[in-house]
Image (cartoon, rainbow, N blue to C red):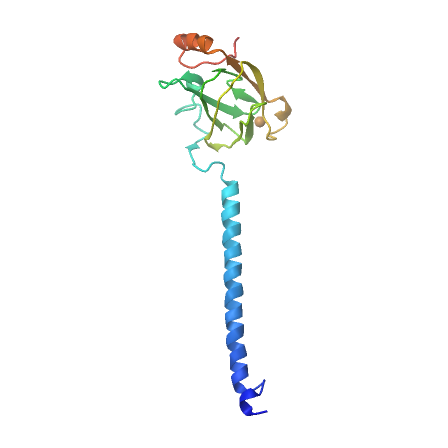
Length: 189
Ligand SMILES: [Cu+2]
């Protein structure tokens, strides 16, 4: 065996050092990518909405979109219906939401205290109400009738009693109601 082919010769040792350096670097790159992927996944999963809109729970009742007079359903100029609601320990306001059948409905809701759940049974409406953030979801009801709206995020000792209702009425009834009030609910009916 000549010096050039000696496995533990100077050249081989140098090659091994360089190889180790490159191997370390490539493991480092993979580790960095794993950390980046994990961070992106966790960060996105912990954000309540892809588009963030905020609402300060401390001033919710005093000013802005979610004051009491502004809660409930309103007929928009384009014929769709906007529903604004809040969840708080341990009720929804309005406790009974009225909407027309066969109409695009947009919900905008938030929490005044802790995390609550906003779910309408028999539909795919299912969002979390996170204090500080506005949750939005759009839907459409194809049949009239009443549906339950339970809070489905444990929010404290009164959680199991936190229920709301959605009453889906025919379009004419809703239109007639909308001529009398700017914001509608079925709380007193
Ligand atoms: Cu709740």
